Amino acid sequence: MMLSTRQYWLVATTCFATALSAQDAPKARTVAPTPTARPLPAAERPFGTLKEQAKVQQAWLQKRLDGTLPALMRKHGIDLWVVPMREYNEDPVFASITAPETMAARRRTIYVFFDKCAATNQAPKPDCVERIALGGTSQGGVFTARRSTKPVVAAVGGRQAELWGDEQWQALKQLIEEKNPRVIGIDRSKTFAFSDGLSSGELQGMSEALGDQWNAKLKDAEGLPLELIASRLPEEELFFRTMTTKVWEMTQEMFSARVIVPGKTKTSDLVWWWRQRVNDQGLGTWFQPSIEVQRKGKTSEEMGDDPVIQRGDVLHCDVGITVARLNTDTQHNAYVLLPGETDAPAGLKKALANANAMQDIAMEEITPGRTGNEILRSMLERMKSKGIDGTMYSHPIGMNGHGAGPLIGLWDYQDGVPGRGDAKVIPSMWFSIELQATTPVPEWGGQPVRMAQEEDMIVGADGVPRWALRRQDKLFLVR
Figure 1 (cartoon, rainbow, N blue to C red):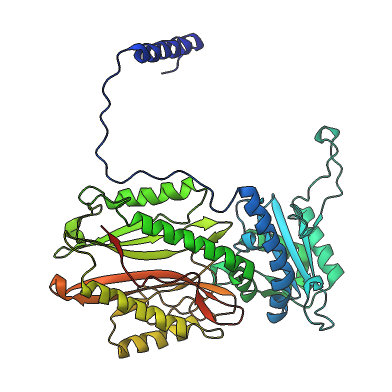
Figure 2: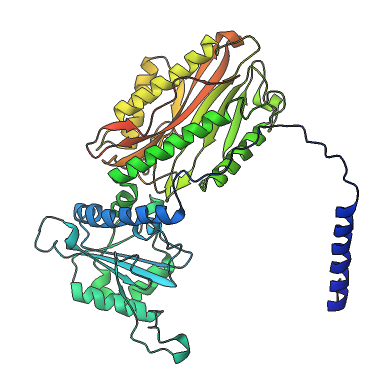
């Protein structure tokens, strides 16, 4: 029903008067709700303000484009790399080449990278690669932004017009003619989403403008964007360690009597505890967290989708945080002590130890130059020789939660992952070592217990793997 203006204000005034009358009425006794989880601590900013984070991110961007990109262009034989995209249809490499203040492409933005040292075979160095933006901004000074020569009306305040439509493609063609590259890399791939950012519409518009001469030099860059997204800096590693420390603090707090009330707290209470705690600290997350329960003598179906946590339960979480465009991915486990217990049963500790043994194997097998499928085969053979029943499904992490680089199995593909598992590990790449070991527990009458673990690790610039912080080798105890 549509209200007239007079009717609207009459209703609003009446509601406001009713609210005032309610304030003057005798106060009813407030009954506190039955607690399901302990209250949250005060909000804080463990990584500083957004402005402080942006300053750090901009320094990373400059160093990535100066130090990492030139060597990658030379490695993959690309002397001119063109990355066109439109607003809200950004290339996956977008976050790796733009400033922290830039949330989306500007109308159309065409980023062009030209290795001017490739023709003379000079060693790649920072000043070898020219970085030009046809549309958009200079991204804090890391690109040279070319604008339109089109005049604009005075009402706009004398601002120079932005490149637009076919004018951008003609500007690209002119730039390519200036540089005369041997190979033009484009982001197109049937295997890797991270290398397939060139939309069909942008490819069509670019191809029509460039003509046969330059189209003949187009080459799928594939490995170039994949490795640029995957490559991390030493400065980012230090920041990532702090992020991982924060995750550990939060999982230990969540899996404790400070949060859990056995017999009252549901798994969904912990899910939303995590989401709220993340938000209160000015952090983000890239997926909805999950909490799972295993219980002696019970199946997951019998417990239902949102069980109440009881004493004697094994708890499992899958959580992550996002800060400064970096992501974590972590799975930890806990045990809710029964009355009189001071530690978890030996069988549960053995189950965790089997998962730890799988982690040890993974850390030994993940080395630069090996593919994900090679690593998976070696891991499964070594697990079998140790009598461990488990599955391996690890993935790169960094600018994306499920990051650029080789997959080491999928939970439902233990024979290898064609294509995505054939990529190779490179130095300065991060992984989430994600896996599970299933072990019969004597104290539970031989019931199989699944210990799923996930911990972030770093392949250093020297090729040596190490944990971003550490791995869980003891169950958290809820007293």
